[in-house]
Figure 1 (cartoon, rainbow, N blue to C red):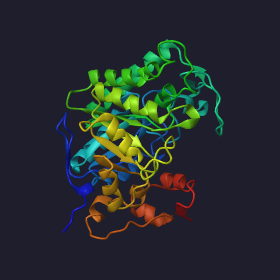
Figure 2: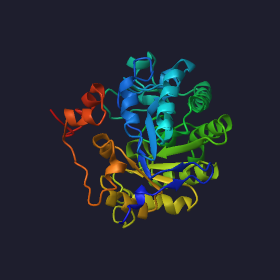
Figure 3: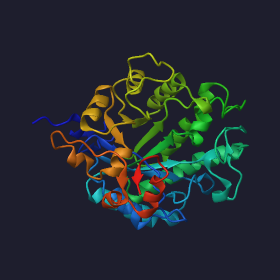
Figure 4: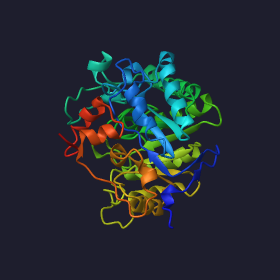
Length: 364
């Protein structure tokens, strides 16, 4: 019987971490944490139910109080949160999965209604976005403080028992804002050339790696293209090369649709994952996320050059995806899902309500 390649084991070359399959639960907003950033029973249940995945990643968790992006967000900014983080890591590790905490700062996407402060970012800028609050430009103290906060958060995650962290440099949050030419118009050592715009993420990576045990995984998630912020494919590929030089343990490429070519090269026959694999060479592990539902699609993206496949929407409706995928011919049910289906797949009511905002995802 043919076993899909995505269900075969993988080993991280630097740390030796072995995962039972190449299926990664991608970090997803679930809005189930308590208001103080501490873990809830519902959030623990949602993540632990997916322990058959080779890697389980938390939602994006804020490293500083002024970096919170939404209600019900997991926090990693204070030692008072360690009991919940430890409980989560222990539950995931006991179930046999590799546990990652995704850590981030919202930057301009950390609204004042949550933080009590005007958002800050690389520069002052305007974006055509709902409820947009113009940010103030970062001071040197802001930047150095954020780098230190990422390092402290990673130390906290290691102390809690997580196997690693994923630095969230995708989806328009603070690291992305430093990378973009529209959102970063600084003229000092943190802006201008790509090398200077990439300095922020590179210094975060260096600070985190210096602070955590050598056995701890440290990866970075990137968006290939973010046009409204001025992030281009060419720049993202170069940033990926630099991160590899800096010793990143994995790159997570957030494709949205893994079967399409880049927007910058619409006529190309090379999907996005292939561009990153060709850019960084064969040694660094690559996770590709976006648009994968079936085991056959997962294997197709592995053939594009990925080592692991991130699942998001498919994982919401299918807590046992890696186990079900072992059945020949299995096809996952697509949305819309009933609320009862989502409850049976360990979503709490806050998460189900959030998913109702997604078009055609929840059927009343």
